[in-house]
Image (cartoon, rainbow, N blue to C red; front, side, top):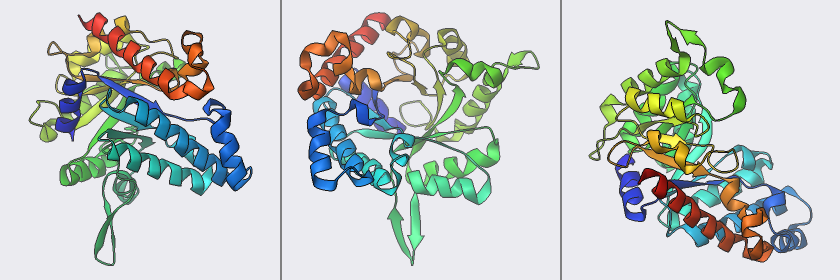
Amino acid sequence: MIDTLVTKIKKTEAPIVVGLDPKLNFIPSAILDKAYAAYGKSLEAASYAILEFNKGIIDATYDLIPAVKPQIAMYEQFGLPGLVAFKETVNYAKSKGLVIIGDVKRGDIGSTSESYAIAHLGSIDVGGEKIKVFDEDFATVNPYLGSDGIKPFTDVCAKEGKGIFILVKTSNPSSGEFQDKDMEGKPLYEHVGAMVDKWGKDLIGECGYSSVGAVVGATYPEVGKIMRKVMPKTYILVPGYGAQGGKGKDLVHFFNDDGLGAIVNSSRGIIAAYKNEAYAKYGEEGYADAARQAVIDMREDIKSALN
């Protein structure tokens, strides 16, 4: 799957993933009104509205980008109907040829981690029938439990041709409380990065990159420079662009000299772009057009920085 992702990045010239992290206050009133009329003010209405909103974003951007990243918590908060919206979003994005990065941040030990891996990347055996469940292409994984928590995911990746992105240095302000702690003269995130490099050595694709990627936030550009050296064959998923403060100039060192090696996420900066003064002219009814323009502007910002 890493080969597919890299191919799509090259084709679109946009190392961008759109984070599909919907909130009800992002969704235009026309969509919400239609949902409430059909389902009342219920979880089912929320599920319907989220899916319709996501479809609009996908329709407006799928020709510009290689991938989308739905964050599962934004769907889980609406219970089982929300998870239906998550799955239908995955299906719809796949129908448009997009790579799906499931932002699920799973990680446990033994059979529990294996079950998470099966749910999001693999197939479950039901009476001899192999059935795919959520069926994302990549999943984000928490490495805190060590190799016991990672191996079930890498096993499924090898079997199913999928990939993972392991949390190394996250974009949130308090990430340093643990991730920056000194261990034997290096911050913890460097040790985690070295393990990511190790875990991915047997899953290198034809593109020269591993199916085992890393998450390193755009809000810490100096860390990106360090981790690029620690993990030369690792694709880096870079959150924190846009609404969290990251800019194109902050991203230069996350990429290798070949212009590859990183894919940058923007969520509300794109899906709620119409609420931003810069795109206010589109209005609620033009939320998808605003998202498309935000993607174009992000692509040009990154391209300009890399050049």
